[in-house]
Length: 165
Image (cartoon, rainbow, N blue to C red; front, top):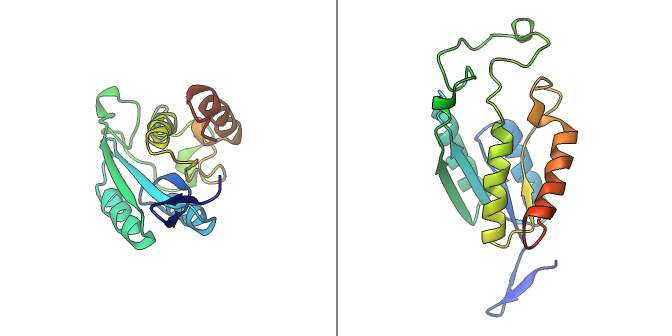
């Protein structure tokens, strides 16, 4: 879809950006803006140990000029299973992480975040969703793999009125 006319003003198509405050999500948001999207940010407070991420997301959102910024609380601490939301020690350095799924993996976190973003995209008539996942840095996270992202794109087309991609 091209820019819409509303009230005599040209309006860019919207995109939901999952904005964590980290470098990967900032890069994804900047790419969306560069591609001409009007940004609608979604930041999830999921019970992570460091609230500095939320402050960084707020600052990045302001810097990028997001149209709207939603902060969603979703406490995943009760589920357990991750050093990011529980009392497990966070490994320092790649050697301690190993080859299996790392203890910093939050079970299905990106799946949950993308489902929230998909609902917001449909409600706000956004055309696209941007998430900053990095297979090179987090190769042990199942929901960062390209095949997962492709699968979610198919799910999004099936699960919404508009078929958000």
